[in-house]
Image (cartoon, rainbow, N blue to C red):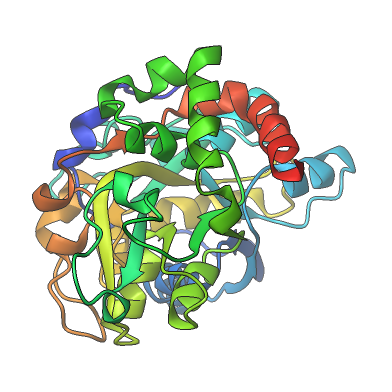
Amino acid sequence: MKLLKTNKFAIASALAAVAFGVSSASGADQLTVVSWGGAYTKSQVEAYHKPYTKQFGTKILSENYSGGLAEIKAQVEAKSVKWDLVDLEMSDAIRGCDEGLLETVDISILPKGDNGVAAKDDFIDGAITDCAIANIVWSTIYAYDKSKFSGKKPQTMADFFDTKKFPGKRGMRKTPKANLEFALTADGVPARDVYKLLATKEGVNRAFKKLDTIKSSVIWWEAGAQPPQLLADGEVAMTTAYNGRIFNAIAVEKKPFEIVWDGQVFDMDLWAIPKGAKNKAEAMKFLAFSTDTKRLAGQAAWISYGPARKSSIPLIGKHAEAGIEMGPHMPTAANNFKNVVQNDFEFWADRQDELNERFNAWLAK
């Protein structure tokens, strides 16, 4: 799948979202929109679903999943597509497009930014692809419960892997993605060299060797809602997590959690339409509506994920419920963006199956 642009760190300057008025009669009575649940889906419901239903009358049915392409592939191959729009990680969007599992998107449907800038120039680099359009920038970070550390507190990715200095269980997502990057960062590899090393057998071996050092202390999670709960229940001393889930626990639930941004792996999520979706036209309309300037900025009022449009930057304000200024809590805020790894979308699209197989074999040892 082709990405419109490829300048990786342009995202650092691109937190935003744009206004757009859609003007056509609603074609479907209901759309099934699939995302990740929890605070993230709530942010989409508030910023996208409710305004869309109010304007066009189309009911939005939300469903949750845990990522990947397996369910989309099964529906497409069975010629029984139940989902209309799915929130995908970038590597899955690339792979799904290459495998013919997703509809192509005509970028002419995307509205200009509120500032009049064409969509192709308003979206951050890499956000517009052949089959998917980005909505957010997000990061996998790690976090800890401040109340559980009376002395020195974790500050670096190396600290996450240091169970002698910082005893306790660790929570990690049950996947090689981000964990291999974290392991190499913790082992002293500069962020700029992480994927160069992972592209080699020696680099992959080194990452797994580092993971070996904490394997016996790890509780594995799969759904984004689990890490904050693991922390709250005291089951782990620290855990990797999606930054927005931890922010929500801090801002809304008043949990004493702290995010460590060092070594964060930042990524984009995109809207994609499964090949053969029954409500394709309506799904395209919703995709365009939900990625305009105001809608993306509106989502940033509910969760600390950066909008995929530059024109949204000036519109980012306070959290809708907690009243907290959201700008400093975005992954790309200057203070959070000092030692970061951008997820290499092509690397994971090409190597996901191979590394999943090795990861699962490693888990089973």
